[in-house]
Image (cartoon, rainbow, N blue to C red):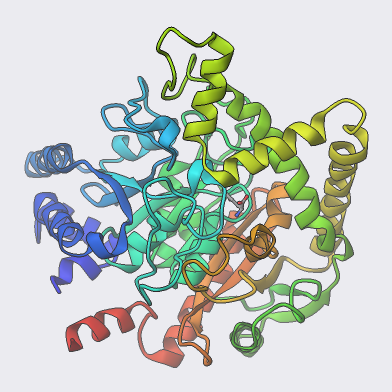
Length: 501
Ligand code: GLN
């Protein structure tokens, strides 16, 4: 394996800036890797080879001219196919947007380009970000690099699998109910959901607008923080963007210390329904944190148990409204436009032919929940539960600086195992959804492999809104404590395994 593809992004940035290597070489190494393994992984829906190499050469020229660039200049990155990037297709994993080329670039992608990052291509995802396994993609599922017969999580499975397969050192995702943290958890990578409004949603195709949030994916905590710093910040083009300075994430990611921090174990996110190996690694991590002089407290958030049902009313409601634009008139591939059908029939045919079963299920569910006569009973009640969950968080954050739980109840399940069982699929987001409903920040960090199946386990850290610094601080300590135990980061096991073959 070319060492450049498993070098941390922070190190690649340094090597490019000092001339130890150049961006073109780094980018070419990753393009070669994609060429070698992506037929097995299917992490990328589109690889932007020529443009990536041109961007890399442009960075190299600026470095050669003596320009001082940002820490990630010249480092390649994968972009979830939900973000617009002019010149490349944006499909959202849907046949509806097959070949759609957006006429503008999302703010977050623009931030990446401005910081000199090199965009490798667009990563696979569940259709319109609905799913927990990337099996709802119209372009085939992504496979988990730890075990190709397993799911990489969803909806951003492509981004996380690309990291674990060493196809990219960095990626971005979007998290509506867990789609950054949940894939991170089951692929042994880092995924951060920023505070709602922390990263611009402009140009991120809307799934559920009150929940959607863009965020960084990486193999290490420092890499995620450096990327977070680039992505985040106020954007006047997004009316829900927060006009405040970005929390000090990079500084926090360097702390690796939790002395005196109050860490709250959420008793309602654990126990029944959580796999033994997940619980074991979670408990061991809490013990490590206690050993590092954090103060461990137990907190109860009794309304979290209603988070899943509330989410699966609010989320589809917003979906039913947002996806109305895919009517083959404003957006979307047109079907049946042969002169024999009315405009309304063409809309119906197009939506029926182009949307997959999960999207259709949610549009129907959401339309029903919002219909007059049912609105108060369903959508209204769910919004009340949302308020109760926000109160649970507020009370818990009086007792603890951060809250922790397993990021997902189980490790990566088998491909095909849950596709026909939506209720089982939804369970994968049990621990991540409360944060989306409340709008605060949370992340998943790798804490080893479950003894029963040898698959990665994720540790979730949640913090109050705009306290991403606490998430990164605890994450950096978790990373350091486990690396002391293992002698190396978890992902190095994948390198060793491959080199041994
Ligand atoms: N799995 C969740 C869902 O299907 C979360 C999706 C997401 O965060 N985009 O709604």
